[in-house]
Amino acid sequence: MKNPSTVAVVGGGISGLATAHALMEQAEAKGVALRCTVLESGAAWGGKIVTHTIGDLVTEAGPDSFLSSKPAGLQLVEKLGLNDQLINTNETGKKAFVYLGGRLRELPEGLIAIAPGQIRPFLKSGLLSLGGFARMGMDFVLPAKRSSVDESLASFIRRRFGQQAFERMMEPLMAGIYAGDAEELSVRATFPRFVELEQEHGSVLRGMMSVRARQNGAGRSEAKRTMFVTLKRGLQELVTALVRRLTDQGVLLRSGMTVESLRVRSNQAGRWIYDIVLQDRSSLSADSLVLATPAYVASDLLRPLTPIAAGLLEMISYASTATIALAYPASVIGGAVQGFGFVVPRLEKRDLIAATWTSLKWPHRAPPNQLMVRCYVGGAGRESILALEDSALIGRVKTELREICGIAVEPTYTEVNRWMHAMPQYRLGHLERLAQAEVALSRYGGVFLTGSAYRGVGIPDCIRDGAVAADKVMRYLSGERL
Image (cartoon, rainbow, N blue to C red; front, side):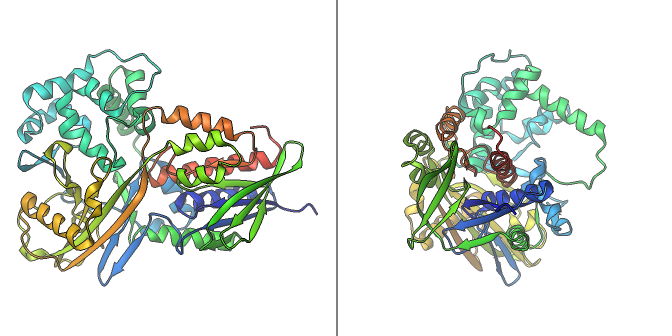
C-alpha cells in the first residue's frame, strides 16, 4: 500500500485548525490517505478566540461574534454539530451610537438609511449636517471611478460620500473592524464589495439597495439570523469542537511547539520534502506545508528559502489593541446605556475606539442584575495607551465611560486582554504584494499561506481561506500543476 502523504500546518489559531479540518474532509471525500500534524507554539488552541467564564459572567478576550452573511462560519458550525448553540443578538435595543460633539447620537441602520423614509431620523441625530447629508447622497449621481489603481479606504469613502460621512460615520466603524488608519488601508483589500458595487451599479448606495431588494424577494427559508451571531457559551466552543473533531479524524495536534526553522530537500524532480525544525531541536518532515501564522512569523521562516517572498510578507504591518471588560450593578446605571454600544470617531481624540454593552447585545453573558461592557482601545496611531499598566488602563476606560455615558459607580469586575502586534494592516498595494509573494513562493511547490494577514480578518474569512489552502494542498499532492 502506498504510504500516506504528510502535511504539516504551522499555527493553531482558527485558520490553522480550519485548514486541517478541510484537509481531512477532502482527503476522506477523495479516498486519499493523509497524515496531518498541526503545530502551535502556545499552550492553547484557537489563537485570538479566547472565552473566559467567571461565575455567571462570560467574556470574550478576542472576537465576540462573526458575520452570518459570510457562509463559511455558519457552515463550519453546522458541520461540528453546534447549530443548537448558535445565538442571535438580542431582539430589543438594536441600536448603535456614535459619540460626537459631547453626546451619543444614534447611528442609522447601515448606509441604506439614506433611503427617503430614514431622512428625518438621520438628520435629527445630528450626525451629519444638511450639507453633509446631501453630499452623502451625491453617491447616487457621481460617476464610478474606472481605474484598477488601488485606493485608500479614506479616499474612497470621501470620494463617494464626502468628508463628514467619512469622519463621523465610516471611519469609527472601520477602525472598530481593522484597528487601522483608513488613510493607509487599501479599499480593495479591506472592503472589496464597495469597489464591486461602485463598478457594477455606478453607486455604492444604489448597489446596496439592489442587493437588499433581491434578498427580500428571495424569501429565505432558513432560520433567520442577525447580522452577527455567536455561540451560547462563547466562541471558545467552536475551537473546542474543532479540536475534538480533528482528534477524532486522526490529526496530530501538538501545542507548545515553536517552529525554529525550515529546511527543504529534493525528493524528485519538482517535488520537495520539508523538514520542520522545532525549538527543542527535534524535527518532522512533510510533503506539504501550510503556514497559518502571522505574516512576520512566516517571513522569518521563509527567508532562507525565498528572501523575496519573506521581504514582501515583512511589509504587512500589525497594530496592537486591548479589550477591557467591566461589569457594573445594573440597578445603578443611568439611561445613557442603551442599544448595543457606541463607536468614537478619531476626530474626538478619545482613548476609546468603541464600547459594546455585551449583556444587552447578547443573551447568556451576565445575570440580570449585572451590566457587562467591553471596551476597545489602541489601534494604528493610538497604541501609546497600551504602555499603561492594567490598573491605569482600567482607570482611563472608567473615566471615558463616566464622561461619555455618566457611569460613575465602580465596576464589580474588570479584565484586561492585550493583543500586541495582532491585527494585520492591509495597506495600499496589499493584494499586489501578496500576489508577488505567492509567485516568489511558487518555486517551492507544496508551501502555502493562510490566515488573517492575507484576505480577510474575520472568523469566516479565516475559515474560508483555510479551506482554499487545503484545496491547494490536495491538488499539489495529486500532482496537479498549480
